[in-house]
Each structure stands twice: as structure tokens, then as C-alpha cells.
Amino acid sequence: MDGENLAAAMIENIPARHEGAQAVCVYAVPAPVTGDQVMATLAGTFDPPSFA
Image 1 (tube, rainbow, N blue to C red):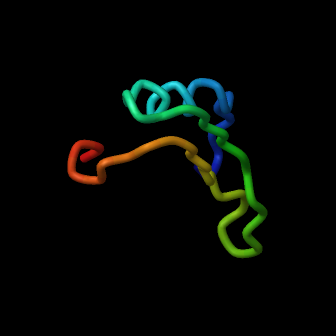
Image 2 (cartoon, one colour; image 1 turned 90 degrees about the vertical axis):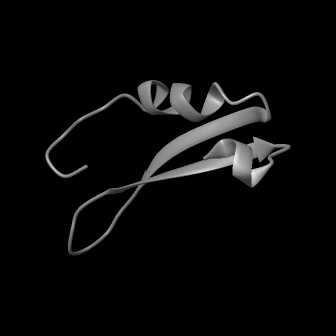
């Protein structure tokens, strides 16, 4: 998200809506070429086809 400052909670709310999501965490990971990259960690029970 080069050049944009977004609150992690705004991004976390999207995958957290999924019925199988028990915990969602969004964080920045430094990348030397592109700047920070947005990463997400999800915990819960997921059925991949239903997440699409």
C-alpha cells in the first residue's frame, strides 16, 4: 500500500466477517524495494471455496 496510511482495524474487519474467522491480525512487513507490505494472519476454521 505504497503511499497510503490505513488503520489495521479497517483491513482486519474484512476477513473477520467470515464465519470461520476466530482471530485476524494485519501488520506491516518492511520490504526494501517497495516499502512496507501488508500481511495478514488468520486463525479459525476455513473452507477455502467458501472464502472466495
